[in-house]
Length: 192
View 1 (spheres, rainbow, N blue to C red):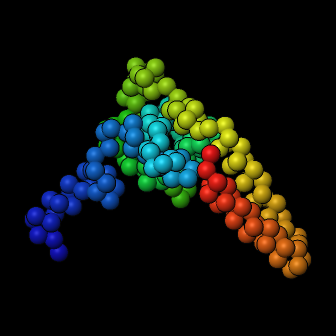
View 2 (view 1 turned 120 degrees about the vertical axis):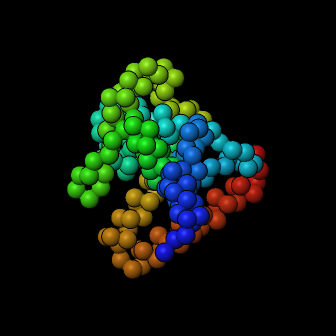
């Protein structure tokens, strides 16, 4: 099956987290992303919340699974920071490897809770851990928050047209959305 070198390589990859993603010791910029991608206007890197700190703080409140952690961070940051599963699950695995959290199978997934060592760490580092979701929120411009809220409202209205509208109404709604997309790109072409 595997020779000795291949076995050692697989073992090293597993020790780094899922899919050989590398060690996850420095989580200050290691996860999640802002809506619209990790790069802001002009290609500059946007500041990200600390996934590791956020997971520890949220698990201190109550046990959660990975999906619940993502949802809670999204909600607490007013949707300005939505960590991806690819940032949450490696952090959970690393914290479990360090003995700070324990996972238990509940239903079809795993729920994570702090161990005694994890609770001690959170108590000792409470000030440094802070509320990482607020970093994401503060760097998300108010105008960006407004436009995302409006887009969400438009999507809800479009969904209602799809559900309750006639074929003619659905076609008209689609034409409006296509024109809105063109108009939004035109705004970018105008400059500041």
